[in-house]
Image 1 (cartoon, rainbow over the protein chains, first blue to last red):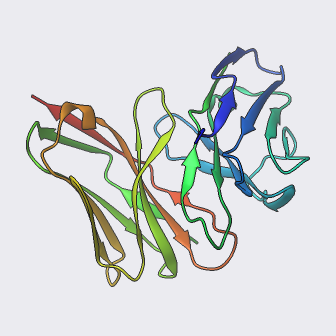
Image 2 (image 1 turned 90 degrees about the horizontal axis):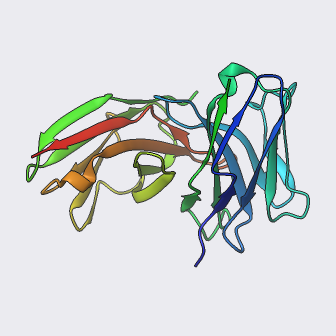
Length: 115
Length: 112
């Protein structure tokens, strides 16, 4: 079974530029999460999708971050314009569904450096 | 709100047992997870325990849950240099939207 795929793995951009990250969850997984992990800290939730609907985006800085999962499969996270403090690893994770799947699988992450 | 606390560092000798501790605040937590993160990699699920269990063993890993004290521990037997990584504890509260909350991670350093 293929895991959670993320791209790009690494990205360096200048502040005020924009960047987009892509995630393809495990096939059949209804729930998709985006987490931000700053160096030395644990992952913090940005947004959770259930199929193509947003379940929780209360921690997403909506003035600069946006995310979508239009067809309920893959997802894109965008940052525009980027700030220095956005330098982090952006982790995508997926889970089968609330009833039959309690295991959450993570991708390898997209490492962002803003200079 | 939820809060998960872990000590930041643990250093052990190869072959010894490692015990990584975690405390959480949400008494309604249903699942508690342990993830491993190696340098430059994502989070790898090691094991999890359901809140109605006290202990779970999986090969070299033993998870102990003390619900009264809201304390979770991960014991790694016969620790190897390949176990050097950051270990994250995460809790999932009951009901709601099934969102894991992570601790800051414990860096395990295994030396010969």
